[in-house]
Length: 257
Length: 210
Picture 1 (cartoon, rainbow over the protein chains, first blue to last red):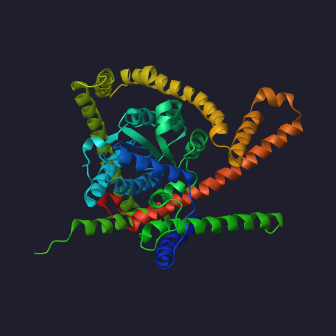
Picture 2 (picture 1 turned 90 degrees about the horizontal axis):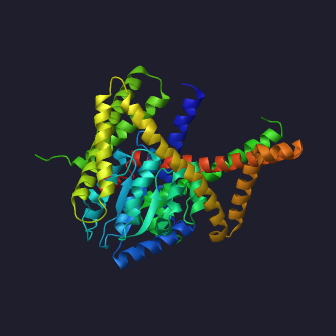
Picture 3 (picture 1 turned 60 degrees about the vertical axis):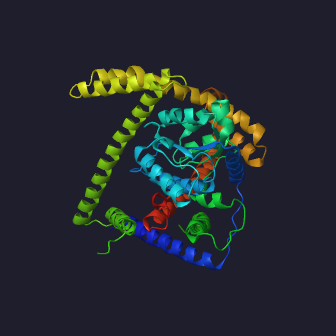
């Protein structure tokens, strides 16, 4: 075992302990969450969809579950669970198009579980989740018909999208409908930032289910600790990393490294 | 006889498999590596079967849409026909891939290339639109950084500039771009690691409704 392996094991243990600790602390203290305009916009879109009897479409990118993009895919499941809970009173269940077949099946399971758990008005069928293509551009093209559908009033881009996501903004109607756009890919984040006012940057997609619960509001203590714990941990670790990087720069300038 | 609920077994199976695969990356023990490889092979076979079922479902959905009376059926027919032709050609050609290579070069690559070419213009239009709907300091920084990067990487302009200015421009954009990329990457890495741990430790099980 070399230093790289030891650092990896220590990092995993520290993060796991931090997650547990943040969850325990969350039960004692309220944690304020910074407001993100994209989620305020999404909440409005969800309200419009529920009141207007229209649908919400989630377009997930083509990140494979056996590759490094799996994290963004797994997060999209947590996001779908939260979204399905919030629009359970709608006439239409959320429709999902996915660029990875494994994630498509997991999405179907997630939506079915969320819908049955909350006694939703509408049942999830096999047609609500579709595998829309195996390559990034095919996934983008496959997501378009659902976004153009008159019954879809709002669309969400999530998971692993590259710069091809910007092509969805070249068409007027899908562009207006997209109320949230997040990705784990840096090219994708840059393209979405340029194309959309609803873009998420950095780690924001990975805590999207927490932000969706109450965007910009102080958490109530009866909220599930598991969601907020991840957000607390990421916020703390971001400061830790910033301090370490700055300390390294200062030490190098001072000739200590 | 009291049966164990399947849902209570799932987190244990997930945790055990996850820990074995994760430990296999860090600890160099032959039996652990063999076990990790076995689990990964199972996962890859399963993923392959899921792709096949996903493609079949896509074809069936479009076939049903093509048979129905509403909407434009042309696209549905084209998709189903293209899927069938590609499948037959790939099976026919599996020993010496002549037709399947032609299909890739003559159909697939030109379509994808034309979409990529369109992407350049879409991104340029998006940058122009950015100035209108996002009127804040970060939008100005974004546009300025994009402009400077384009300027410093354009040979026609770089040749006519004094060396000192191009050097300063290039190091400024490289420095700023690297700092930004690293900042975002730290966020993405932390986010991905936390999500993985949430699923691994059973905090989150959305597919079970938890």
